[in-house]
View 1: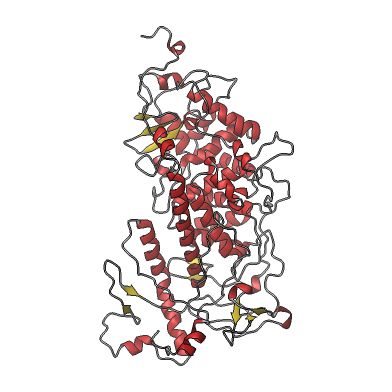
View 2 (view 1 turned 30 degrees about the vertical axis):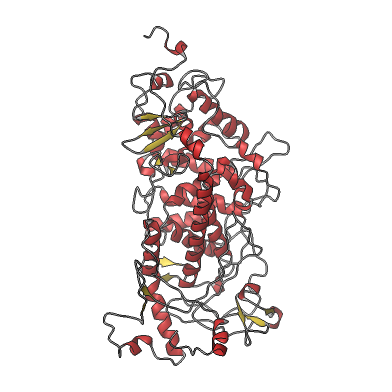
Length: 605
C-alpha cells in the first residue's frame, strides 16, 4: 500500500482495479491442526512463485523492486517487504499481494449459485487484448463476463476483455496466442483428457491435505446411486446427482454429515468449469461417481500423490482418464423419499444377536431387501461394495467424541502419509480377526464378541484398537441363520479375504454397475485427443511435482475449499444439536449376557 497515493479520487480508481489483499499468515493459533497444515502447505507451495511474479511485474511497470528498496532499511533475512502488525496471540507476519477475490458465497447445501462462476485468467497482469467484435459486451463487474471487466471509469459500464499471453514465471506459458473467438461457446458434457488432467490435479490438491475425503466421497457416491429402485414404475432414484443438487436430500438422516465432502466436490466442480483451459458442463451425477473412482484408483495398490512422474502414477492417471464413462444427466425432479432405498444399520429385530429374527439376520435382510431386491446387485456384488468400509470412519454417527473410529486400522485417514489403504482388510477382519465362526458363537459367552470389547444396540466397538463395526458389517461375517431372510454373504467375504487382487477386480466391476444405476443415457469415455490443445498450458513444476493448475488456480480453489469446510462445520453442528438424545441412545452400552432367545441354546445352563 505504500506505493499508492491516499487521495480519495485515487482510492476510488484504485479499488476498482482487479486486486485484493492476500493475508497469508494472520490468524489465531488453531486447535485444528488440519487447518494450520493446509495454510502452511499452501504457503510453502505458492509463496516463492508469487514473490517472483510480483517482482517481475514491478520491473515491467518500471517500479523499483521492494526488496531493493528494503535494502536501505535494517530488515535482516527478509526476501520481500514485510509489514509487521503487532497483534496479541497471533502470528504477525503479513504479506500483501495484488490478487483478485470475490464475495464469499455459500455452497449448494445452503444456496444454489445462479450462474457458473467466472475467474480471472491471470491475476498479475492487466488485460492486453480485446476480443473480436462478436464477443464484446458491456459489464459492471467481473461476474458479468469471462474473464475480466475492464472499466476506465468506475462509475460507467465497462467492457469484457481477454488477457494476452504471459511469460510470468509463476504461470506456465500459453502455447499459442490468446484465442480470437468467444471462449467456451458450447460446453460439452464429456470432458477431454486434458481437461481431466486439470480435474485430477484439483482433486489431488484437496485430498492431499484432507484425507477424510477418501471415505466421505465414497459414501456420497453410493448414497446418490443407492437410491435406485428397479421395482418402482417408473424406476426411481439412481446415480442422478440429487444428493449434490437438491439440498433437502442432505437433511435426510441417511445422508447426515455429507456436507463437507459435497461442498468440496461442488467447489472443485465450479473451479474446474471456470478454468480458462476447459469448456465443459459436466453433471453433478458424473462428479459424484468419478470422485469414488478417483478414490479407489488412488488409494489401491502403491499409494502415491498423483502429481509425481513415477510409472505407477502415470498408469493411474491414464486409468482415471480412460476408465470412466461420462454423460450422466442430472435429475430435475428429485424426491427425498428415495433415501428409503438405502440400507439402514438399525433394522427391526428381536434384540438378540443370533437367531432367525435377531440382529444379524435382520441386518442381512436389510442388505438383501435394499441392495439386492431394489438396487439389483447380486449377493457377491453387495458384499464387495460394502467392502468400501475398508477406508473411512464411523465419523459423526455416534457423536464427535471418542466413539468415532475406522472399521480397520488400514482405513484410518492417516494410516499412511498419503491417506487410507483401499484393500481387502475389511473382509479379512470379518473372517480372520473375529474369533466366532457363526452368529450363535458370537452371541455366546465364549468366544463371544471378541475382538470387540463393547456391545451397543446395533454396533460393536474394539476399544483398544479404536475400531467400530455395525450390525450390517457383522452380517457379512457369518453364515445365514435364516435363508428366507438373506443368503449366505460370508462365502463371498471369505473369498475376498483371501485374495486382494480378486477383491479389487470384483469391486471395480460392481462400482461400475453402481455408477450406472438408473441411467438410461449412453455414456462414453473422455474425448481424446484434447479438443482445445492449442489453448493448453504447459505443466508447471512447483517443487512438489508437475501440475496442470497454476498459482491462480490454486489460490481460487483454496479459497473456495476453505469456505466449503466452514459451511459444512456450521451445518454439522446444527445437525448434532438435534441428535443429542439419539446419540445418547446409540452410545449406551448393552450388558454382555446370554441372549433372551433360549431356543438357540437348549441344553445349556
